[in-house]
Amino acid sequence: MLPYAQGVSPPTVVILAAGVGSRMRSNLPKVLHDLCGRPMVAWPIAAAVEAGVGRVVVVGGPGRELEGHLPEGVRLAVQAQARGTGDAVRAAAAEIDRDGDVIVLSGDVPLVTAEFIAGLAGAHAASRAAATMATMVLPDPTGYGRVVRDPSGRVDRVVETKAPGDATADELEIREVNTGIFAFRGGALLDALDQVTADNAQGEYYLPDVIRLLRAADHEVGTHRVDDPALLLGVNDRVGLAAVRSEAQRRIHERHMLAGVTIVAPQTTTIDVGVEIGQDTVVESCTQLLGSTRIGSGATIGPHSTVIDSVLGDEVRVVHSHLDRCELHAQANVGPFAYLRPGALLRARAKVGTFVEIKNSDIGAGAKVPHLSYIGDADIGEATNMGAGSITANYDGRAKHRTTIGARGHGGVHVSIIAPVSVGDDVWTAAGSVVTDDIEDGALAVARARQRNVPGYDRRRSGDPGT
Image (tube, rainbow, N blue to C red; front, side, top):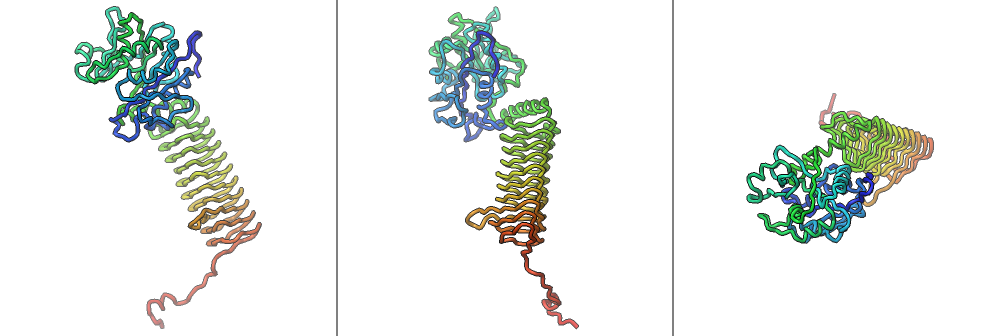
């Protein structure tokens, strides 16, 4: 939470998110599309909360699609019809304090930061203007509303350019543009909204018309110049979403690298915004760290690995593997080509090797499941070494059953354990065994048919009488 200057009260933030986003060509509302692990609309919400604003209000559409997607404490206002940004803000009028300040953001302009919001709030409060508009100067302002100033340089109005006839040729030459982000005095905003009309080519109520009305009433309108255009990148379609995602990912990478994380190939690495990574961890190329993943210090993840909603301890090593909702304690080692499914727990120094799948199982400290094995619904004690091709057969066609294997065990290759079975400590299993009964501590289990050789079988099968 950022501090405000003395005498500056935290503003209310209204986020406009009612647009249907038809250019996205999607059944999902535009602002709910994922952006690095968060719905798009959650980004300006998070920035507003970090900025310590007084209240956050999101304006959604009549279908109430945003219900259930907003954090606790964020209020939802409903715009009954899609009639423009001015009408959208009017839908939130009941949440606006006449005696306080209001900042209006867009749900499809997700990269605003807490520092930007606090800076705009401070500049607006210091200016004592009725409105403060965030503006940019662009070499190509196509598609943006133009900021028209009077001969003295004061803001006069904003001219939209959405349709032919909205702006004159001279106005289209203006390079200072309205970003769609404003700060207002609450009472001045509410009074002006009551006067906004839909007298334009689109038949919509434009929020920038409030600027013209305030100036006509001799109110002061200020501007807050934005020097970094990437801060206010908007999303209209999936091309725009990709551009915004690229910038968001760059910021995420930069934050981790400045905190002491090595990202070997940022251009091939995906890290969601909620991921936590400790100092001196190395993220190798072609790696994805997704969801709420947390990684300790000194770990090496990748190359070619995906980690989803998992917790990895210090000095963990994961190579060419896929981990989903699992937990690895310090110095655990995974891969290459391992698949750890939900509920997999590897305790300190445990090893899961090549072409191994682990599901809902507790692998003890220092235990090893080296290669070509499936361990499901099992508990394996510390320092036990499972042989290649070990299987815990946990499903009987109707229900899952659990296998318990003690400490310091020695598994032979190609051993299948048919759950429910309990295997004691210091147990040995012979290669090729199919274990169906419990094994006591210290025993050797041999569960296979004795080998029998049939002399001359091939000759008799071919009908050759021999000599």
